[in-house]
Length: 477
Image (cartoon, rainbow, N blue to C red; front, top):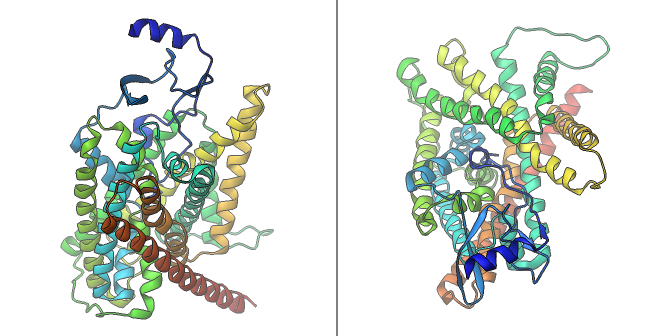
């Protein structure tokens, strides 16, 4: 019976979806984070009756049918529990780790409770995304969940915030590249007579131009291979801080303030950015052999990451005190070999991110180009648009070189929505009739909390950013 159905289904005309990157590429999606490379993914849909496509080119097999709903299971979904935990941790550890000591010093040691609390909330919202995917097995991405909850408006809103987070995170990465490259190559002087640019700006331009050809790569496996180095770089940075205390002779004897309430809004943006990874969690869920264990994966992963962030925050703040930089690598003793390794790791990380992070923009553009257009012309257009985006990111990073304010703005404006507000809103809307009243109150309370935190954080970081730009313009005049 099934063979007959399969044969007839193969004869139907099907719509091929945009295919998600191979699992190894998905696992390297980190933009905060965050970790962050996403493209629209949906189940193949046949033209007849909008049923799941069972063509021979489909990557799915029909596992069972209950109440007329096709339940799909990915053929390649064989990820173990340990594998999923490692991958989720790899997605979460990223750019945000550089700023946790600075955030703790500015907010006071009491703000560590906010860091831990946000970690617990983000673990809970990760669990909610899994529940949303349970409700609709055809949903395969963050934007699919948005559409399931609020229709086309939900998809558009989710996609807008995803792309905005990717773009703003890349600006932060480039600012970090600028700051660390100038430090690691201190003393290097470059002058161009016709360009009124400093040596640090010229060095940053050269680094970005070296990375520019990577955005022309059309083979996503090659892009993923380049980006996989970014995870190793992040781990090197993480390890270098405690090693500075152990081998570098720096004593952790500075006193951390108890609480600086006026800095909490901006600090919250830095903290929440550190947990930004939710846009790829649905992909990780779908890759699991046993998706029912996704909640446990979230709990274990966020527990480990929160503990690491908290330990790094306290250690960095104790080591460097009020002088701690918004990027911990810039506070480390410059003569130490460990510092040089950490600086170079911070410099190389953005260069490994550009191609994979810009890929979703380019892929979506290529998908929307006329089918009659030659593949060569599509590649040229895609490459040119990718290059333009990268140069625009470079221009913004050089114009607004304030890492802590841009990162805080990204966290408060975008990451809080993706990590807290949207998952709670999606789950409440999708599961309204199935969840208890206390759970509804909890979700709505978190939506309100996230909204308030986002508004106050956005206002605070924007105000600081504008003031810094005014001071810079005043000094230049």
